[in-house]
Image (tube, rainbow, N blue to C red):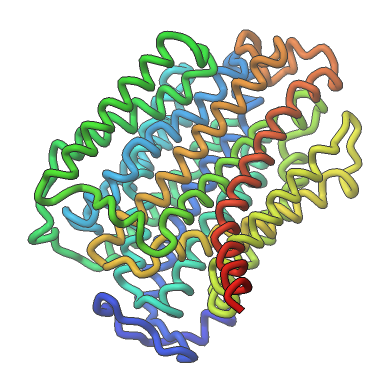
Length: 502
C-alpha cells in the first residue's frame, strides 16, 4: 500500500458539486489530502475496533463483574443505542453547523468516554460510557464520510477515497478481534483504554488538516424534526435491545414500539410540512440508496450477531483463550485490510452492484459452512473456510455498499446520505443482535442473564449449548440471504425483461 500511495501527488482540493474525475485519469492527491483521509480513516477504524475489541472481552467482563448474557448484550447494545439513535441527526447537523466543528467536538467526547470506561467498575457506569461513546460516534462517522464526499470529486476519485475509508472501518472491526485478544490477555480494561491515545492523536491531526467550513447559510434549522427524530430513534433502539430481557410480548416492549412509532410518525408529518426538513424522504428514491441501506443491514447486522455468538461459544463453552479465538478469526481481518489498495479499482472495473451481490453471496456461504460446526471443531476444515468467505464478503461488500449509498447525491445532502447508511448499519445490527440474544436466552438457562458467562457457569455441556447457539447462527445466515435477494432481485428482473424483449 505504501508504494501505491507514494505515487500520488497534487489534486485540486475542493471540487464543485457534481464534478467528476475523467475516465482513465490518474488520481493524484496532495500530501494534505492524504493526511486528511488518513485522519478520517483512523477515526472510523477506531469505531470498528471499539465494537470488536469489546466483543472479545465480553466473557472476561462477565466473569469479573458477574454478568450474564442478557447483561453483556448491553455492553454491545449500549454503544449501538447511542450510535443508532442520533446518526441521522449527526449527519444533518454536520451539514448545517459545520463538519469540522462537529467532528472534532464529537471525537473529544469519544476519547473522554473511552478513558472513563477503562476506569469504572460499576456495570451501569460501564454501559453508560458505552452509550456516550455511541453518541459521539453518531457524529464522527457521518461527518467524516461527508467530509470525504465533499472534498473528493464524484467518480474514480471519490470511489477510491470511499473504498479506502470504508476498508479502514471494516479492517478496524476485523483486526479489532486480534487487538482485543491481546488487550484482554492483559486486562479487559485495556480494550477501552487502547483507543484513548489514538483518538487524541487524531484530534491533533484533525485540527491541522480538516478544512474549515462554514455553517449552511440557507439550510434552516428543523428543531422539532431533530427532537422527534432523536427521541423516536432512541425509543425504537432502546425497545429493541431491551426486549430480550423484558420479553417481546411484554407491555413494556409493546408500549415502547407503539410510542416510538407515534413519535416517528409525528416526525414524518413535521418533515412533510416544514420549510427546511431535516430529512428529504425523496432521497430514498434516488439511485441505489434504498437497496444499499438494506444491504448494509444484512451485512453488518448478520456479522455482529455471528461474532457475538461465536465469541461466547468458543471462549465460554469450548474454553478457547481470547487471543486464540482472535487469531482464529485473523485471516478475515487481514483480507479486509489488504484489500484497501484494490477496492476502488474493483468498483471501477466491475461496478459496485456486482461487488455487493458477490460479497453477500460469500458472506452467506461463510455462515452456511459454519453451521456444520460441532463440539470438537477442526480449525482448518470447520472454521477457516468460513473465516475466509466472511473476509471476502466484507472486503467486497462494505466499500461497494457505501459507494452506492451516496452516488449521485448532491454535496448539500452527503451528510444526510451518510447518516442514512450508517443508521441502517447500526440499527440493523441492534435489531438482529437483540433477536439473536432473545433466541439464545429462550434456548437455555445459561443464557438467561442470571449467571456469569465468563467462567462458563450454568453450562451443562458443550453439546447442549451448541444446540442453544445454532438457531442464532441460522438467523445470521437468513439475514444475509435476505439482503442478497434484495440486492440481486432488481438485477435479475432487468435481465429477464431484456431477454423477453429480444
